[in-house]
Length: 115
Image (cartoon, rainbow, N blue to C red):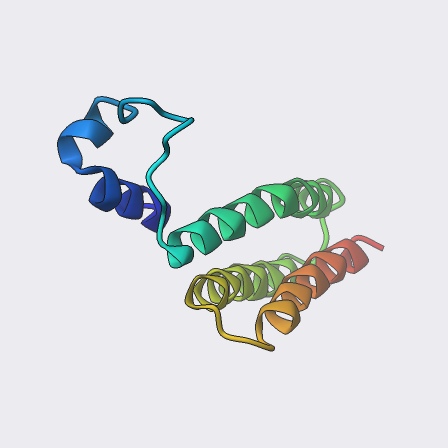
C-alpha cells in the first residue's frame, strides 16, 4: 500500500478516510506529515518517468535487443526507483539526485541496447 494513503488514513481517521473526504475538504484539508507529502511527490516523479521507461522496454522487445542486457538494466531501474522513493520519503540529502540519475541512465542504457 502507498505510504501516502496510510498517512492520510492516520491523519483523517479511518471513518473519514473511508467516507472519501473530511468535512470542508479541500478548503480545510488536514495537514499531512512532511514525509507523506514527499511520498506523494516521489510517486508523481515515478509517474512522469514511466512513459520513457515503458517506451524503451517495448522498443527493446520489438527490436529483439539482447534480452539479458535489457533485463539487467530493467533491474537497475527498479532498484534505483525503489531507492529513490526511500531516499525521497526519508528526506536524505545529497542522494536523491544521484539515485534518480541512475534510473535515467538505466533507461538510456536500454535505449542504447536497441542500436
